[in-house]
Image (cartoon, rainbow, N blue to C red; front, side, top):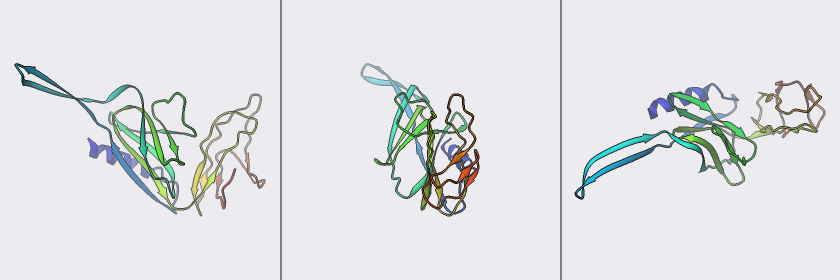
Length: 193
């Protein structure tokens, strides 16, 4: 099943490459938990039964040391029960983690994966130089993960996730006064907010 997981994840990652100017790498991590029960009679093992545990019953925090130097465009994937799931990136460490999410602590080079499944996981990333596109809610509320775009490349701006009561989102404006509509294409030449 591990080979199937790797192939399925590779196919998913290939469909999400953000740039022609960078190389996408994928690292795989397999978390398998087996429970072995032995029956002992008269001091001798008379029967052994092994069971693979696939669910934890609660959300676990899996902390993985992971170098993030000159890496960007991260994605985390899980192959479980025959399907690939793209995990959701969080912009900050959660107080109450939810299954299927992750947080990148770039300052400490740690990847935090929040999951209730023992599965095959993959981390994809691009290598090279990049620009960061950050989002400011202004007087709105909500949370958006900054985008990382390979230098010399373009990308579709992440759809607006901010809200403000009584207002309708009409677009973005960067610190230089450039305006973009929701999900417009941007080609940064510096870090942009």
